Structures are given as structure tokens and as C-alpha cells.
Figure 1 (cartoon, rainbow, N blue to C red):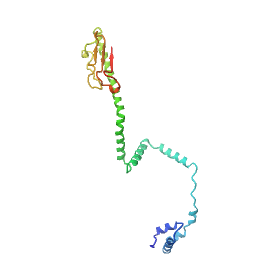
Figure 2: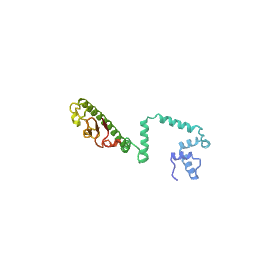
Figure 3: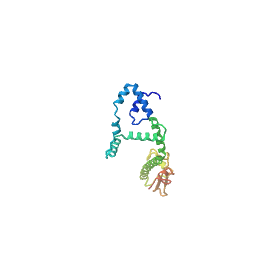
Figure 4: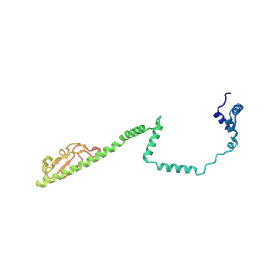
Length: 217
């Protein structure tokens, strides 16, 4: 058998049981190496064999959970978000997350989230356009009332007659982007009543039917 090195000899010194061949190799090494022989002479393996692992305290699990909870609560929300993203990438990928891969993961998540949120955004935009359309109808309704006061209670045959004395510039439907109120103006036969509406189906996404919103006098 080849000669043992000092490291191999020290490892065998700590073994409780050795084969006859291993003991012979260790003995030959100790005969030739005074340093290892002195170290072996001061090694007390009996104390190592008698050592017992102490039992953990009964509340060790509770204290560990409390410590982990305390440390987690002290971490900022952004760090917790990054740690969650890091764990997700490590779980589903073959490499650990870097700032670049983490950023890519967040971007992919946002791209997948857009189709889910877009209907809500569309409804919000439609709701805003309905509100703007109602404001335009009130403005035109007020101009029609002013016209009627100056014309013995009669309304004009067409909205174009309001310009320029009563309306300087005709508003457009926010959703359609054009004038939908001129076509939606209907005058009663007695010229003392009218219906003014946003002509078309421009607010169907907001749940309104055709030619809505509208006002009547």
C-alpha cells in the first residue's frame, strides 16, 4: 500500500474503527512523521465517542417562526416582490435570476395582464365619452333655449341656425370624433318641442342603445 499523506493520516486518527490494513498504514506513517505522531498522542477519541447531541428546547420551532416572521416584516415590499420574482424564475428556468431576466419576467407578466385589464380600460374610456357627450348636449340645449326666447318660443329648424349668435363652434362627440348632434336634432311640427341626440351607436360599449344619450324639450 502506498504511503499516507498527513491529511489522510489525520482523518484516520478520528475514525473509531479501522481495518487491519488501514491501521498498519497509519502506524507506518506515524513512525516516519513526528508531527502526526505528536498530534495522535494528544487525541482523545473516547471523549468524542461519549459526546451526545443535546435535545432542542421545546419552544425552538415557535421562536424560529417568530424570528422568520419578524425578519420578513422588516423587508420592503419591493424587495419581497423581487424575491418572489427570483424564486419564480429559479423554479421555471435553469438559471438564477439576474436584473435583466427579472425585468423580462415583469414585462411578460404585464403583457399578459393587458388583455385582462383592457376591457375595463375600454369601459372607463366609454364612460368618460358618455359624460362628455352629455355635457355637449346640455350646452346645445341651453343655446336652443336662448334661441327660443328670442323667437317667440320657437326652436330653429336646424342646429346650424344657432351659429354664430348662440354657438360659436359646434361640439363633436368625444367617441365619434365628429358632429353627431346636427343629424340627431329633430324639431316637432309646432316648432316648440325638440329632441336632441347623439346620432348613431357610438356609445354601445357603455351599454347605451342607438341615438343615446339624448335630451327632449
